[in-house]
Image 1 (cartoon, one colour):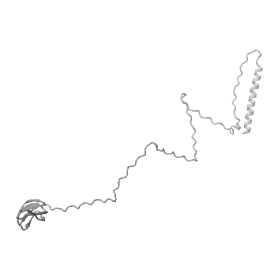
Image 2 (image 1 turned 90 degrees about the horizontal axis):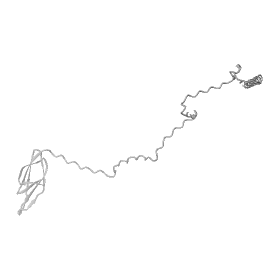
Image 3 (image 1 turned 90 degrees about the vertical axis):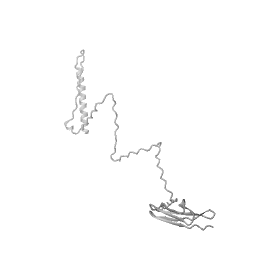
Image 4 (image 1 turned 30 degrees about the vertical axis):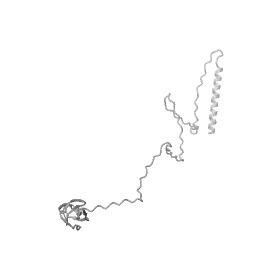
Length: 206
C-alpha cells in the first residue's frame, strides 16, 4: 500500500511539471506584438495501474437523496441506537390522578345480632271440625241460658243450631227475691251433624 501511494504521488508530480513546461514553452513561442490566445488545459483522468487495481479500495458511491418538495424542510432523522445485548426496559404504567376521588366501597351488610333470640311463634290452634250440630239445654228451674258468653234465651232451649266443636254453656238461675244467681260454665262438645244435650240443676231458692 505504501509503494502504491508513493507511485501515485510521483505520477501527479510529473504531470504537474509537464503541464507547467508546456505553458512556459507556449508563452515563449507567441509573437511579441500579437494578441495572446487563451491556453486550454484539458484535465487528465488518472487511472490506476493494472497491478494496483485490486489493492486500492474504491469508496462506495453514496445514494442520491430522494426528490422532495422544495418548499418543505426535510426533517432530520435521529439515529436510533439499540443494544442487542441489553433487555428492553418495560414501559411504566400510568399513575392515577391524585385529584380524582377514589371509589367508595359499599357498606357491609348488617349482620343479625346473635344475642337477640327470635321470638317463639305461638302454636297453631287445633283444627276445628267442619259442620254444625244441635244443642238441647235444660235447667231444673227458671234460668237464662248463655252459649259462649252470648244469651240464647230462657231454659229450656231445644234444637239450638251451633258450629260443631266445643262450646261454653252457662245457666243463670234466680233466688226467692228474684235476684240472678250465675252458675258455673260447662263445656259441651257438639259433633258434626249430631246432637248434644245438657241438663243443669239450679241451686235451691232460700
